[in-house]
Image 1 (tube, rainbow, N blue to C red):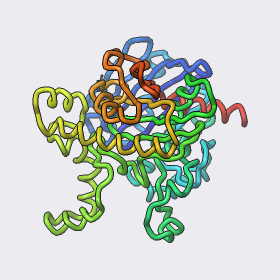
Image 2: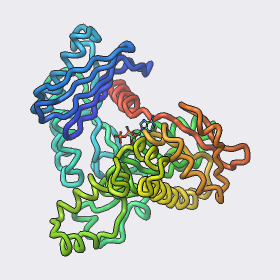
Image 3: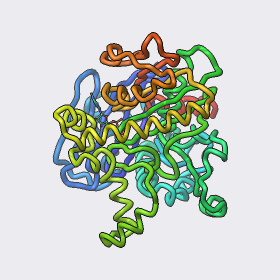
Image 4: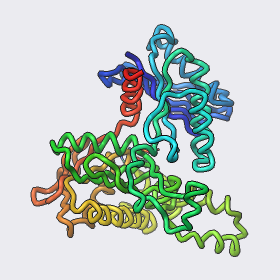
Amino acid sequence: MKILSVNAGSSSLKFQLLQMPEEFEIASGLVERIGNKNAEFKINFNGSSSKQSDLVVLDHSVAVDLVIKGLLEHKIISSLDEIQGVGHRVVQGGETFKESVVIDDDVVLKIAALNDLAPLHNPANIIGINAFRKAIPNVLHVAVFDTTFHQTMPEVNFLYGTPYEWYEKHGVRKYGFHGTSHQYVSEEAQKRLGKEESKIIVAHIGNGASVTAVLNGKSIDTSMGLTPLEGFPMGTRSGNVDPSIFQLMQQKEGYSLEKTLNELNKKSGYLGISGVSHDSRDIVSAANEGNHRAKLALDIQAKRIVDYIASYYVLLGGLDALVFTAGIGENAKEVRSLVCKRLEVLGIIIDDEKNNSRGDKEIQHKDSKVKIWVIPTNEEVMIARDVLRLQNSN
Ligand code: ADP
C-alpha cells in the first residue's frame, strides 16, 4: 500500500511516498519558496531526480498540485487512487492530542485552536492538510504531532517556574518537539539494546535541535519547550536566554518584542555567534581555518548540549545509550566529538576512528560504559507507520 508523508512548513512542502508496510521509499521531494515567483520543485524517484526552477507558486494548493502532477507525470503512480493514506506532520498538538489522530473538520479546528502556541508552524501545517484533503478527499488523512511523544513527561519536568495560572489559563509549559524523530530513534536503540528497561538519551541535532531523555521507551524530559526556541543554540536559534534581554534590546536598540524574538529565532545560534553561516559544514570548515567565532559557535553549542546530557544522565539514574541523529548528529563527526569529549567523566567515551566512518554505526571506545550510536532518523516512516496503524484500527 502507498502512503504519502507530508511536512508542510510556512514556505516549503516536503513529501515522501512510501510503500507500506515494507517502509520502502518510492519517491520523495520538496517544493521550496512557496509564496514566490521563483519557487523550486524537486522530486526523487528510482535513483534519479528532476528539478524545476522559477515556478510561480503563490500558495500551498499550487504546491500540492505540483506534487500530484509530478507523481503522475513521472509515472510514479498511475492514478491518485493508488495513494491509500496521507500522514501530515503537525508541530504543536498541545495537551489536546496525546496521540496521532484521523483528521476530520473537528480535528482541523482543534489544531487551529493551538495556533497561538505555535504561530510559526501550525498555520502552515493546516494549509497543507486542507490542500491535500481537497486534492485527495477519499482516503484517510492522519495528523502526527511533534509533541505527542513528550506527553509522557511528568509535570515536575514540564512545568516552568512561572505563575501556575499561566499554565491553567494559557497552556504555558514545556511541550517538546521532534517527537517522531526521538521516538523512531529511541525505539531503534531499544531494539539494539534488546531490553524493554532502558535509559537512552537522543541528541537530534539538525538546523533545529533537541535532546530527549527516554526511560523504558517513554520521553521523560526534553530540551525544547513551549516553542522550538528553547534549549541549546541551533542553526539560527539561540536556545535559552534570560528573558530580560527583551527589555535591554528595546532600551538600547528600540527593538519591538517581535523584532527581538525574530532575532532569537532567525539570527542567533551558529549564524549569530559566528557571523559566518547557519550551516554546520561552513562553521566546521571556518573553524578549521582558524576562525575564532566559528570555533566559539561549535564550542558553545557542545557545552550546552552537554549540560542537557549530563542532567538527563542524573535524571535517568545512569545511561545505556547516547544516540546522535539528524543532519548534524548523523554527519558532523566534529560536533559528536566535541560533545563526547566533554562527557568522559561520566564514562561516555568516543572512539575517534569509529567516529570517522560514515553511516549508521557504533562509535564508543572499548572502555566506554555507555553505547554511543549514530542512528539515521526517519520521521516520514514514523508518520506512515501511524497512518497504517490507524487505518487498520478503523
Ligand atoms: P532540519 O531538518 O532541522 O532543517 P537537518 O536535520 O536537515 O535540519 O540538518 C541540517 C544540518 O545538517 C545543516 O547544518 C547541515 O550542515 C548538516 N549536514 C547535512 N549533511 C551534512 C554532512 N554531510 N556533513 C556535515 N553536516 C551536514
